[in-house]
Amino acid sequence: MKSLITQTTQRTAPLLCFVAGVGLSFSLPKLGWGPLAWFLPAVLFYFTRRSASWKEGAWLGFVFGFGFGGGTLFWIYHTCRFAGVPIPISILALSSLAGFLALSWAVFGAAIWLSAKRLPLAARPWVWAMLWVAIESAGARWTPRFAYDVLSYTQWRWLPLVQLGAVFGPHGLSFVIMAFNGALAELGQKEKTRWLRHNFSAAGLLILLSAAYGTTVLARRPVPAPVGDVGAIEILQPNIDQYRKWDARFEDDIRRSLDDLLARPRAAKPVLVLWPESALPGWLDEPANYAWISGWAKKLDAPMIVGTVTRSGENRYNSAVWINPDGSTAGLYHKRELVPFGEFVPFRRWLQSWIGILAQMGDFKSGAMHQKLFETSFGKLAVTICYEAVFPRYSVFDAGRGARVFINLTNDGWYRDTAAPYQHFIINLFRAVENRATVIRAANTGISGLIDPWGVVIEQTSVGERTRLDVLAPEIAFPNGSFYSRHGDWFGALALLGSLLLGAALFRR
Image (cartoon, rainbow, N blue to C red; front, side, top):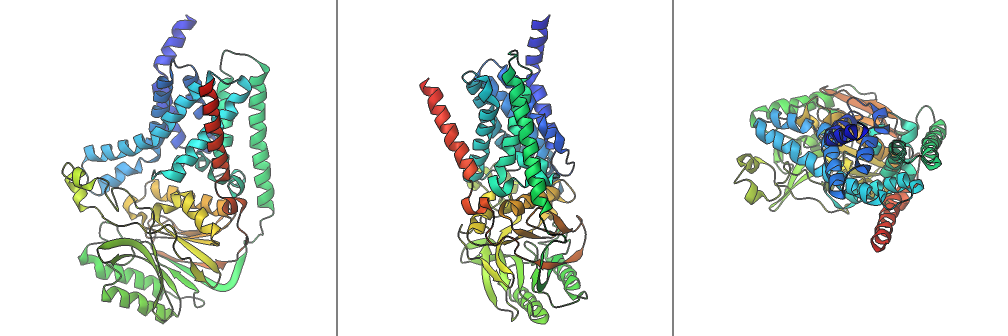
């Protein structure tokens, strides 16, 4: 009877892993059920350990990751439908992205099975956590993947745990989560030794130590939050309907919306005005557009950073332009990480013959990795545009060059009130903590806001709100940055090295 129950359970293992993966996505915004992350990955560990081969382990990892990715990115389906994309293609888009994210989990499932057969009980949860960090870090370093499945993000509500990022980067908390899940899953195995209990206790202690460290750090945070004495920063959130944004019939409406925000009363002259991504109803070099924004810079006698599309010869860029108070251009930043099937289409010539709508999508060129930082009255400032904030490599690179304030310009109007704007906003919280930098975000339809170097959200707007958010310019609380910003992804590098050495040792054996 017991054997029959076991066989039945294994046959349903893919379904259970898929459901667990979907459930794990509920830990991310909007829902934010963070405690789910402390036991749902254990389902994958449990069944992968009992699978018949590494291929079966890889399959279980894939279906778990597909459920996690599909649940996390379900807003992709809604976005396609908002744009009038047919239902079959919308489903294909979501499935393709979820499947791409699931490949990392497939590798992890195979690695769990292979290592479990060769490792002593005492080492398993810790090695599995190391392997996951290696996979996460490799994905963040070298692939263009939508890295929404970094496990640290599941704990966005718990700031004491998030503080680990300043030392270990985005993967330190992922290690803690995976180690606990691995130890929890091992308690259900047939072997009954004291190591199972010791590992579980040690993993629980690691959580408590992480929380204690973060609580101590937050207790030292100045209250109220430190601000500079140089003035206010104005953040424009015009809430322009994305599906009217490039329609010439609505150009005047767009200008009036932004003019209204800029004309509202203010207590003092701003030190910086932020416009969201692609705020202009056209190209920067169009005389009417440039005259418009330079005119406002002169009128306010304040510098501005304006999200706009630019062109140089045959190249087109998604850019942020720095406008001096006298109306002249002082700097230009080109987006480095473009959105596939949005700003560029991979294999365009082949794919658009099969999917005609791709011919209407963007064909932008990415900017260079090394671009000049903007100099402000309150320190060096780095820009990311839209989902570039999802990639830790850009923020830590800029922080390593001296940036202590990050500006994120975005246009989340594509997604309306799905989970996407909430996910994108919260990811900036992690970039702030990791680099001990202030993040200021200007979003067309929201969420705009100010996040301090401890990850505390000082100000934020609502999705779908037309407003101007005035915030005080930040004081540079950490002039030397963080340990992570000074040393880069050292923890991920160690995990990669450890995984390679382990693989070589097991292969030789």
